[in-house]
Picture 1 (cartoon, chains in turn blue, brown):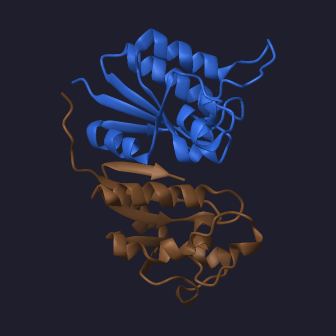
Picture 2: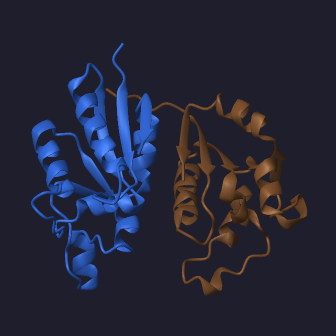
Length: 129
Length: 123
């Protein structure tokens, strides 16, 4: 029976193995009979939203990978704005309100913990990385 | 159409209060869930038990203090808070060192309890 799955990513891009695992799990979940309903980026995971990553050519730019994933699958990518703000992960509204540089790529949805609660409530399974 | 389901949620805290802000970000998540009236139970294991010390001065650490919020959890209807007895022993702590409303249970009991939850999050 098909299940709905949501993913939480708590690790930053290139800072360990968890983002890699989350990304491949997300792809596998999307391709499977189950439905991946969203990916929520929290804690250091918010840094995956950064458009300002500078990554050498022999390493992976996870921001671009997540963007491409979203464009290929339409799976929503939710950014916890408050967790991001303290890490310099700045969405458009914050940048306008505080007159600081906007640093995220547009495929990420500025969101909050309320969205995480929604994902928990509506998914059959939530998988945390 | 996705239906909202009432879930029982366990949040397992393993981080010390000063090394990272995982404790604070875990608490933010707990408060969000409580405000949406989800059923949340907290577990503190390993270094996580250090977060429960009632006499903590984190003002020298430079991160946000959240001990007052931890102490106030029962006001948010989060009153099921468990600490691992073995982790407390390793940390040299007793129940008297902890904030109120903490139930101390052994690792087997924690493992047994966790099996009944729909969702388990770890910080």
